[in-house]
Length: 311
Image (tube, rainbow, N blue to C red; front, side):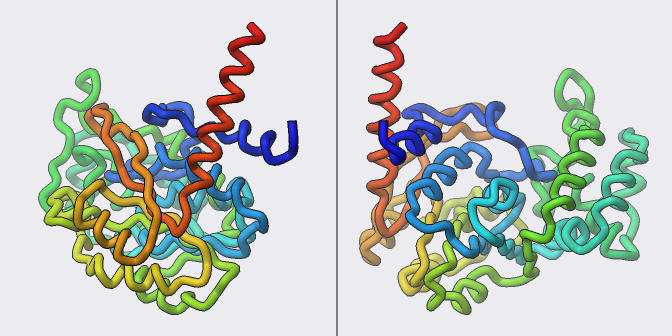
């Protein structure tokens, strides 16, 4: 078996939705629209490149599972995360700016209860550190991890555990300190991802993972889930078309999105994923050329067949 085939077999692309429990969890966020399920596809995308990218830019970072995976696995030399939401941005600024240990300790020392949550979230934060802690706390105690205004706090949660259902202080602390250990590989920019993309259109050694809020074609999920959901999707596709570096974009499957992809000469594939209610759905992966995905899937299927015959 040749070198290319060995690389392909190492990153299988299944025909059914990825089991996210089998994917390494890197982010401290329990983020709506999170892309943990996409990690194996991104690993395959990087494995298909001939030259290791110098920089990966994630212009709509959110929970940043893809950027974190790329940084931890050193798939690119540097990762740039961009986030417009000031509260989410505050978390990344603290973790990557020297405050990771404070935040990890604050999480470990917090005595979780319905009353303690209500008291903490009623305070006006006096520092960026406190903004970061409140944001992670809210992310963990709100329904679905939703940070947008109007989201309610868990009452019953899993097995009647209420607000403690998604509060795993040791796990969160460990993830934060792990990110702190590789922070030299990550740059964070608080601001407009589209603007950052525009400033790097001529950079051939920069690749982009683009995961915008799903508000195209009147989709309401993005409006419900994200504080900063307004986005000019036409402009995003136009800027993406100008990029000299490679990109991988993910979108909700909608006719408007397919039309934009075709208009700009992009290729796309439908991939299975599971939503927060465990229902299997399809999302679009968009790039200039998606044939690497077909090649990986075909070789992995062949490898599976060979393995089955040997049993």
